[in-house]
Image (cartoon, rainbow, N blue to C red):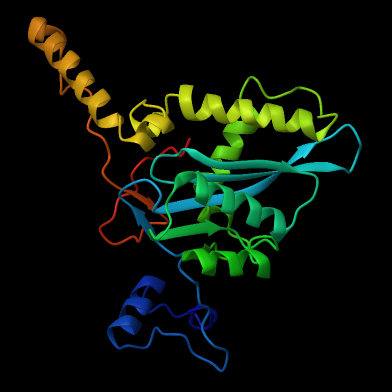
Length: 263
């Protein structure tokens, strides 16, 4: 088109040219170079606890500049419950193996199918951890390289952890101090935090299956309130129906991501 314009000619708009090319099958990649490819992330669906876990490591600042403690955290994607949490002074596949193994035993899920999703860090792909996962029958799943959005639940949980009001304003002086705080956060998050993506039940309640009764009672309360004062209700009552499934990186075709907020 620019060459035609330089000659003082105008035949059609660029969109028209491309429409004709597509109609004739001429709009595909041309040339020796291969067309760019974009890997789609692995999709996983959970309909109950302990089917799909997500895990990651985050830094905790210390009083020594350049030195950090490392918080290893595993969460159940369906319930959002923290099922594994440890703080170490180093980052390694061996520590990751310890955290995963303890969580697996604590949840008592031997023989059940489980997917463990993470990013592509060295501890996540270490031989020690991968061998342990194979022994346990756990299927490893990984984000695409340099794509943090493929592990949104862990990323969102770390943001909640770092911005919760109880997060220390000063760096941790000792690893024991960091561990004590992390355990306190775990208890608050699992047992007290009413999760907006879970219809405001706690992750522990969802994990234990108590959310269905809790939400049923809420529906009854709202129904009674609406029956008593119908003129105050302009639309449907709040949806207290529990979500039956949660997707990690859902496929685009005909799927909805249950729980727009991960934390």
